[in-house]
Length: 389
Ligand code: NAD
Ligand code: MG
Image 1 (tube, rainbow, N blue to C red):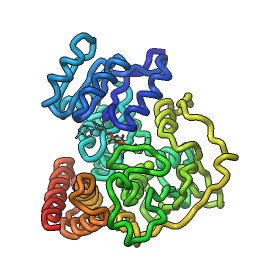
Image 2 (image 1 turned 135 degrees about the vertical axis):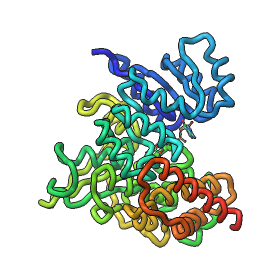
Image 3 (image 1 turned 90 degrees about the horizontal axis):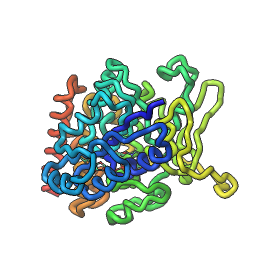
């Protein structure tokens, strides 16, 4: 069998590198078509060389010359600019696209892959959160295969019945979305006001990019995942219960009407969901060591605290509520950026999100242009509130 060609959007990031690690273990199955990055031209050049990529795409055109120079003696063609991200996602030679750009910037290239009917491995949850309905419609219309990479959603996918189309009639009573609780799970509310970006980015179980690490610390990540689960598994927020599970060994569960609860377990290493989705419906080695249950010893569970972590409450309120998910996602991206550059205290993230949700109300967008317009409106509101804070 000829190896499948894969484009990795966001190749220099945490998910991108884990994907390349799994892909490199299976040269008989996969070959790298394109690797992309925002600005990190040096890492991108090194990845293109190591993985003999046909294309290296740098989103920010001001680094194109450096990248071209670094790859001048190779067979890799350099492309630059946002439109090029979509080009390498929809190219006829490509079978699989890993969508691992962080944030709203991933929406258009991911949609390009969806519209071209590719097998799309979705890590970029923000794309689905901001454009849920239209995104899922595009999947249905093109016949693309959408597979979840987020460890929880990948776990849920593995625990759902094979011929699942929605919770209705499939014997599924609830999705149990597990959360580690992040680095501040046990902290008092007052102490949270003073946390630093370094503290917020030090996740106890997972090593991830900075934006998702902050989202995990505020629990906005679980909120975005709640919305993501509603779209992926055609259910509603009342059927998704967040359960805190500090060890991150169970990656999520599905509860059935007969009382059965199915869980997917493993070490907290993203190469497992990546390998699962890459090979699905087959199974391949991911490089992840087997789970040592004796060493794990204990699996703990607790209820989430929406007073200390208001972002989770905001997401429950926003889920399937017009354009609120688009607004919430945009406000959060601006607020997290401000927190990471020390212009906003940690507790300000939830405050900015709540205020923007109150101030930007809009019916559910009916086109991607409208999604982008609502996204821009929410960002502008968030920036304005930041100036005043
Ligand atoms: P990261 O910050 O490590 O990497 C992000 C990648 O996107 C980089 O390659 C970067 O160059 C690229 N990028 C950033 N902004 C861009 C822009 N404007 N245009 C084009 N490219 C851009 O992030 P990550 O931790 O790998 O997360 C990627 C996505 O996967 C996020 O949506 C995150 O929520 C999701 N995810 C990550 C993990 C994890 O363990 N890291 C787990 C589940 C889901
Ligand atoms: Mg997750």
